Length: 574
Image (cartoon, rainbow, N blue to C red; front, side, top):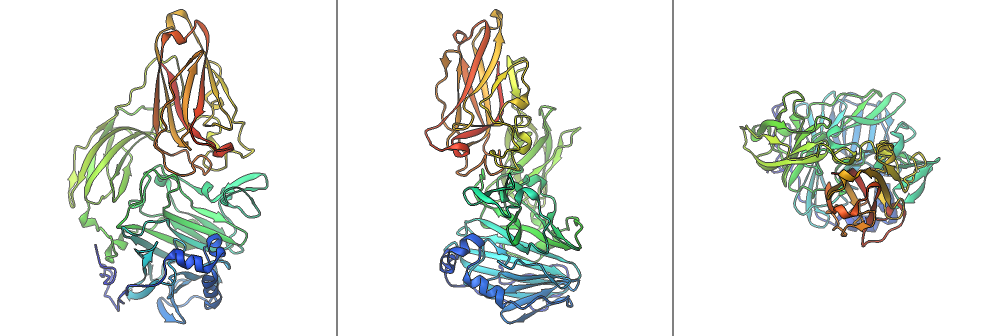
């Protein structure tokens, strides 16, 4: 690991004066927020932060490329119209000016996590056409070390960033760019809670008859293209950058934006625990990623590879990485295949060639990984793969081990690890289940042969739409012992399916292993896929009309949409 106190110079020019980063001391972040008062918890800003905003120098027109140290701030200019200020006392970004207009929210600064607090140490240096600002704390979440890096290139209105945390720095990790709503009013609507009334916790709101939340700005990690907010002649965008140190895999979703009464927040969530299926990765460098400022047009994602040349803590340069190649086969042609890799320090994914199945990984850190083949979002094969620095590991082939019976009595849905095609599928990630734009959740009676999958509920809760009934016909030759399989993609409060066929009832299955978090109400169906299999005796069936009921059971309590529940993948009998 590179020492953040002695940044090395990338191949971009001579170092004109690096500054050492002293080890900080002082109260923990939680102590700082506690001293700041309740307002810090709501806004991420206490009295100390408010005083800094008031004390920050006022917005100024563009200046030449460079940085200055004055009045307790580092002021950095790209020389192309963007100038920002970093507090030397706690690392907050208290001013963000584009072409003379202040873009920062009047109510809170921008910062990593919710600010490093008064124990932060901040330094800056210039090397050729680059300026580097480093802010560090050794009391992050009590005793953890965090280093957050800003890099600016002459003539480019981007703020490049990366964040390192050690093994004692576990906690919600994000960059929050807090912006002035009156200047940048155009936000992704499902995440705009202005003038709303809280309906769940303090983060899901009803606004003009619609449900909205910062959670409903989410996209899958594999689809995180540049996104931002705009105003008249200005746009601020996030390039989410490398996700190798984040967790949850390619299908994980998290917060991207939020609009409040006077503020617009643009986030890059590096780790949160929001129904995350993996633990936080520590002793790693998150990113690089970048904040991009334009005249309002959406920019292309910049090349961030130069960020590996500064010697930031946790950096693994290209020369220290390797590749994995192989072939994927056996995935149902109706589903999209994907190959993923994960271990305790990194995660990656790659799409196989649709014609040949051949795949090549991104440049990976050395180590041994669990390599997984996905059918849609359903894991259908795994193996281990070892990556060596400077080498390509070949022949890492994967063949699906999933078996789908050819002639089932019925099958509702498709085995792809998602509730795709079920009732309210299109709304699951962008609104609360209670939203009036959703069709009624039921209870539902689904008749095989006449009902469509869109009539089958994507989600089922103990206190909302219990039970779901499947009606099907058998002739005398079809009466035999049968197997029922029910796949779920997430579960809340221990919810799991128990079935009854006519007068026969299955044993109660055990709860699946799931993250300890809300899920179905925060815009995600992505938990741990689980498969429930039931052996139904021939004596349970009759010739003619049969009824199977699927009931949510749980030893946990809850009401409404926070009662025990789960998300369906597929239901079949064969």
